[in-house]
Length: 67
Image (tube, rainbow, N blue to C red; front, side, top):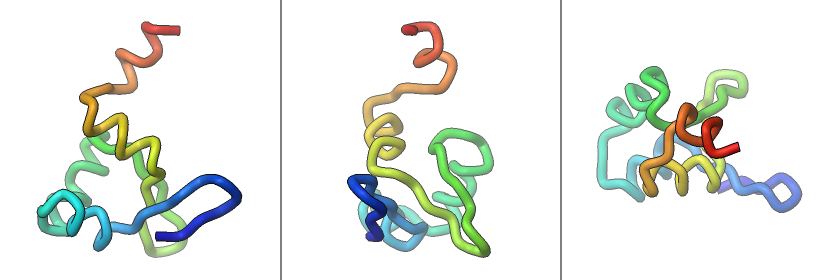
């Protein structure tokens, strides 16, 4: 895990371990937009908030409707 200010970032390997999934499946979720992620250089990172949204079943359309 990396931290920038009060924002925590996790890489693919860490998320795969947390969710007990393969790194390939995690990357697929990124490409499909199921988990919000950002690519910095050659590595993908996910914020703690994006992981929480995924676990709670929020999607970007639902979140915008709530505003």
